[in-house]
Image (cartoon, rainbow, N blue to C red):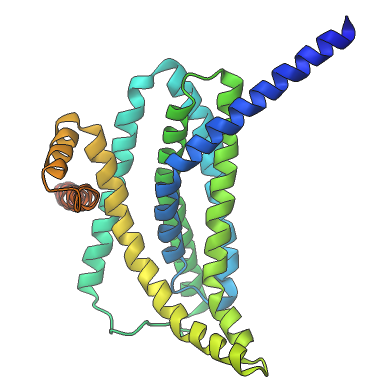
Amino acid sequence: MAAGSLLALLDDIAGVLDDVALMTKVAAKKTAGVLGDDLALNAQQVTGVRADRELPVVWAVCKGSLLNKAILVPVALLISAFAPWAVTPLLMIGGAYLCFEGFEKLMHAFAHKSPSSPVALDESLPELDQVAMEKDKIKGAVRTDFILSAEIIAITLGTVADAPLTEQIIVLCGIALVMTLGVYGLVAAIVKLDDLGLWLSQRPAAVAEAIGSGILWAAPWLMKGLSVVGTAAMFLVGGGILVHGIGPLHHAVESFASGVGSALAALVPVLLNALVGIVAGALVVAGVKAAGALRG
């Protein structure tokens, strides 16, 4: 009798684990696009940080991301249980904020045009200024991560909405940990590429030296490229959230994309999402500036 009950319990546990594994796999596929944007956005935040402070900054942002998800997972479960209608409006607010930050970055880039080659950190900055810049970068990265984490959690929650509460918690926590460690592990690897290049360039083997020199040449351009991609990702993700949250606009984008032919069907929605993100960012920036002017 006891053995039968134990076997039944083990069978139930195995079934739950199978369900959890399947739902985690589905959720991971659906959030893969956001993962790429998250990687680009967070890698660009480290641009300009001193080499010896890159990993501490990445670790600080990673801890902030874990705290974000520790807040978002229980909040998402509560909202799903008691106010499921609030998920879309909250995501749209986050999307508008991403567009706002992206447009501010565009304004700053055009107001302070940089040379065509990558620019390294000015080591002559006073220590206090470097610390303040580092703190600002961490705060900005954690704020941006909050929005992207909210989207990841919301997508995952939609995947497990019909599952029992225990399975929802396991899948949400698993995705939160895997995404965080995956993103910031890759960010740490990217920002230390120059160190790898330097180490290889000092090896006696000619092939290693050539590879190291190539990495040293490419690393600054990679970071500059990630900065551009990260800003574009703000408009793509933010605009995509807004488009999906406004039914008529979403249907209009789908209808337009279906009428351009199969070759451009995948590209057109992405471009339209970005356009919506840019327009939304401009409107939010204008509104913030107008409110600031009224307040004097």
